[in-house]
Length: 318
Ligand SMILES: [Zn+2]
View 1 (cartoon, protein in one colour):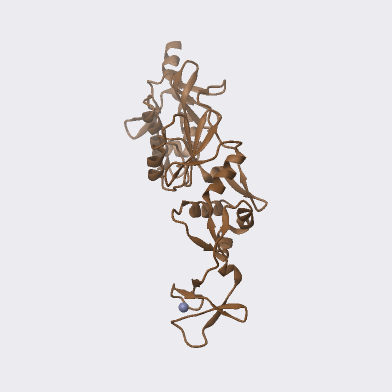
View 2 (cartoon, protein in one colour):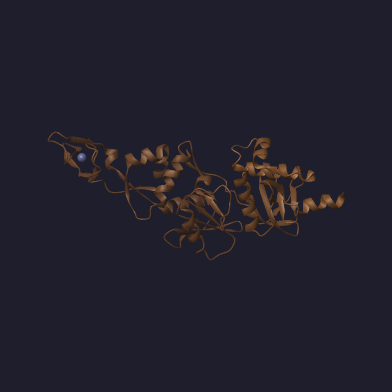
């Protein structure tokens, strides 16, 4: 199913208006094809007068010839008898109607305003609670971030066509279209938008690693305290969560661990993943200018940063 959404994203990402044959669209979009027509995301275009030759391996177009109500092509590279019938789905073509998709998204999100095109790739969708929602019709991360910088409002949320990086280092809050649209019962379905609250609160079961860093049970880091809420929230992968949690549990013993030891104790393989995860965690800390959570020790070992307030508290209690 995700594959179909990727295919749809690819169509949406193409800037110039192109026509696609029903045969190709059905292959790529599968059972969502009819629903996309119903939603007018696909609109019928003129019947193809030239189609890809089916007779040879050369990728070339041939004129469609009509004979007795049927359609054929004759390959210019093959012999006399090389006439091939072309079926109706190969002649029917459709265009992508981006505004219809945006309209469908807005209806699903109960946004009453109409999507407004700001640039070739940036659409202002409207207000979603206290957020300004945008859609960026790009799938490259760098170009998407560049495009996001053009939005002149605050508290923005961007739907884009690419896949979100596993850990959010992006300077803009991006929602992958893959995470909000799926296909169910041959129909496009809008999933609930994972909108983070602007300020996050720590719960009882969360671990306060530092005044400015909380590790939640569901693998998020809450960062930069402001009163009893946190200004930022970043998802981390479960492996990263387990590494931090383990080193936190070990902090009183002041023992440092090698990557291979952590790998064995936590069942995270191969062990070279460990430094990668640690780097990802610390990169988040650097981004928000808080203390690094895990620090290196001699002999390539790792320990929970003794400067974190959770380590200091233990010492003062002793
Ligand atoms: Zn040919």
